[in-house]
Length: 328
Ligand SMILES: NC(=O)c1ccc[n+]([C@@H]2O[C@H](COP(=O)([O-])OP(=O)(O)OC[C@H]3O[C@@H](n4cnc5c(N)ncnc54)[C@H](O)[C@@H]3O)[C@@H](O)[C@H]2O)c1
Image (cartoon, rainbow, N blue to C red; front, side):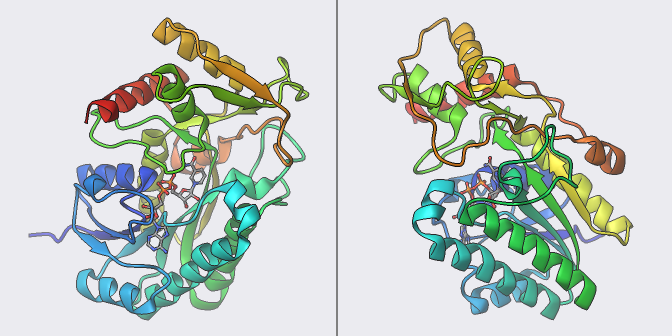
C-alpha cells in the first residue's frame, strides 16, 4: 500500500488551518495538527491526528516530528491581531518569529525541507500601489506585519543556506466558512469584518462600528479584498504540489482580485437577510490603508489558481455558520 504523504499543520485547530486539514484529507494526504489551543478548538480537528504542543517549546516540535515523520509543513500557527501587536510586540516576536525559527530548525534536523507559510497583505503596510503586486514594496507598519515580513526574509536566508524550499502565501482578507458547516471562523476576540457584521445582523452584538467614512475611495469607506477560506486552502494544496515538483520557492498574493467597501459588504448582507443593521461610525484608526486589493496574476500563472467563490457565497456561509454556533 502506498503511504499517504503526511503533512504537519501548525495551527490546524484554528480557522484556516482546520479548513486546510479537511482539504488535505480529501486530497489523500494525512494532516497532523500541531496546536497549543491558545486559539482554535479541538472540535475542529476532525481529519487526522492531533498533537497538543507549543511552537515555543523545541521539545514539543521534536516530539511531533519524531512521532509522525512529516514530508512537508504548512505553518499557520501565529498570533494574528494587529491592534494587540501594537500593544504587546513582545508576544508577536516571540510567538511568530522565535516559534518559526524553532519550527524551521527542527524541520531541517528531521530532513524536511518544504514549508508553506501563512504570510499576509499586512506586510505591504500602506501600499504604494493598487492592486498590490508581489513586487510592491513591503513596508509593514505594525509588529504583526513586521513579524511576518521578517519570517519571509528568514525563509529566504534558510533557502540560500540550507536548501529549504518554501511558499510564502500572502493572504488578503480570509472569510467565509466550510460549505458543509462542519467548521468555521471562531476567533476570540473576533476582529474580522464579516463575522462581526453577521453577529450584529443576528442580534448577537448590539451594534457594529465602522472606523472611518472619509477614506479616499468611491464611497468614503475602506475597501478590502475578501477571499473564501476554501479558495485559500486550495492554493495551499497547489503550493504543496508545486514544492513537490519544482525546485523554486514561491511568494504569492492570495486574494479574489476584487475590492468591496465596508458599506458594500454591509449592504449586501442586509439584502441577503432582509434586515437593517445597527451601525455606528467612528473616526478612522491610525494606520488603516484605504484600499487593499491583490493582483493575483502570479498565482494564476504559476499555480493555475484563482478565487472562485464570490462575496455572496462568503456571506451566506458566514451566516449559516453563525446560526449553527448560536444553536449549539
Ligand atoms: N484570517 C485572516 O484573514 C488572515 C489573513 C492573513 C494572514 N493570516 C494568517 O493565517 C494564519 C492562520 O490564521 P487564522 O485566522 O486561522 O488564525 P487562528 O487564530 O484561527 O489559528 C491559529 C492557530 O494557531 C495556534 N497557535 C498559535 N500560537 C501557537 C503556538 N505557539 N504553538 C502552537 N499553536 C499555536 C492557535 O491555537 C490557533 O489554533 C495566521 O498565521 C495568520 O497570521 C490570516
